[in-house]
Image 1 (spheres, rainbow, N blue to C red):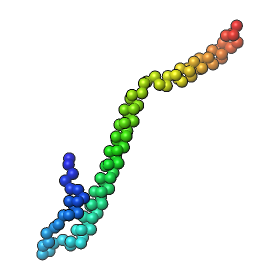
Image 2 (image 1 turned 90 degrees about the vertical axis):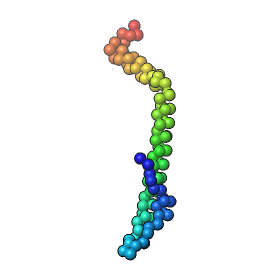
Image 3 (image 1 turned 60 degrees about the vertical axis):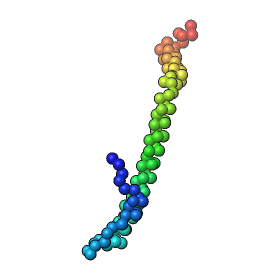
Image 4 (image 1 turned 120 degrees about the vertical axis):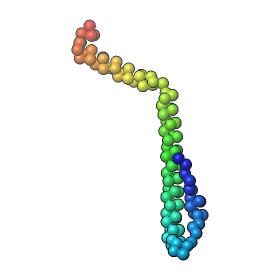
Amino acid sequence: MEIKLDTKTILEKEFKSGLRGYNQEEVDLFLDDIIQDYQTFTKKIETLEKEIEQMKSQVEKANRRPATANTGSTNFDILKRISNLEKHVFGDKLSE
């Protein structure tokens, strides 16, 4: 899919006038609305393309991080839970 018209082409478009042709002022106003829509669409597309690139960059950074980055705190939490469980189950017998 390719865009055939841009804002400049629409703005510079001239219509032939006929005996019972369209009202030129009405056509111009309509084309002005179309140009504004095209400008809005173009800006939105650029914004979305930038967001896509930023998200791709974030995904690449996340994929480059080692998988064991959080295991240090996780292991500590597990050891602490085991210690608390041992104290609860065995009580003072551990110190003897």
